[in-house]
Image (cartoon, rainbow, N blue to C red):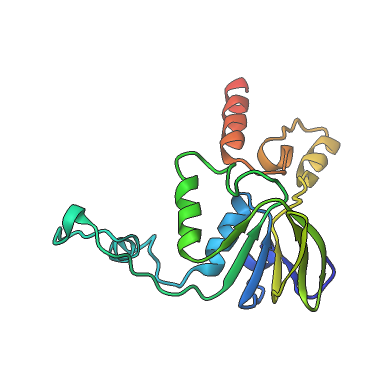
Length: 195
């Protein structure tokens, strides 16, 4: 983890750390998916421009084609990305039921290699050394982005308790592993109702 090619997701998203053209994202939870989408975004802004969205997803708003569909048009992503997880389950299985499929589909369209059941062996100048299905491989990547192993940030909670204040832990401060907005909202709502 001390290799110069390793950065955290905060380094990338918040601090604008430089990222190479070949990237391994370790951790395929919500944050890993967000980072993979960010790193493979061609800059067209489909979420902000309906015409770009329709073009990328093959929606024919003029209805000139059967079923209102046309061949999707996408720009090549700026990076080659591997989205990796240790769990053997389907990559992205923990994403929301109503939106998880679209995140997986979008990354598939962008050529992201989504791999489950990965053992991380080491990182060196050759890249990320992994074992997948009993086979050792080297992913020749320029950058390794860590999106796993989050620890709860409880410093404010501890300061408040030390100062004699009543404080409550919810969301990522309660359990940072596999951050879950639904759980955090539920905890916040229940806490608010109880107060």
